[in-house]
Length: 148
Image 1 (cartoon, helix red, strand yellow):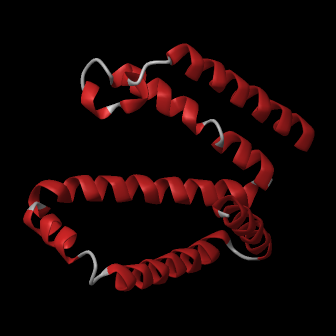
Image 2 (spheres, rainbow, N blue to C red):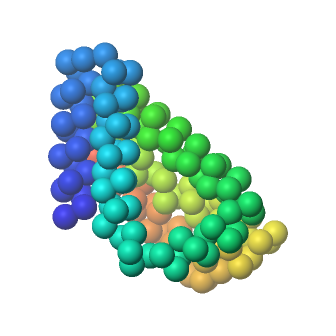
C-alpha cells in the first residue's frame, strides 16, 4: 500500500512541477508535510508522553543528532523533488533504487570502527547480499533501458 501511495505521490508531484514553478510547489509540499506531521503528532501525543519525557531528558545530547538527521532528510527530499521536476519519474526512481547498495557499502566500510551500529554488515551472509544487489542493479538497468 505504501508503494502505491508513493507512486501516486510521485506522478502527482511531477504533474504539479510540470505546470508551476518548482520552488513554489516545493514550499507548498513542505507546508503539507508539516501539517501532516502535526496531525500525526496530535494522534500519538497522549500515548507517547513517556517517550517524549525521555527525549526531553536527553535533549542536549540528542539535539545535534536530530538537527543533522533533519538537515539530511530535508536535503534528500529537496534533491529528489528537484530531480523529479527536471526528469522522468521512472528514471529518478530507478536511480533511487540503488540506495540499498550504498547502505551496504557504507555499513561494510564503517563496520570495523563501530560494529554494534551496522546490522547489515554484522549479520553475515555477505555473498548472498551482494548477489541480491547484483539482481537489483540488473533489474534497475532493465527498467532504465525500457523507460528510455
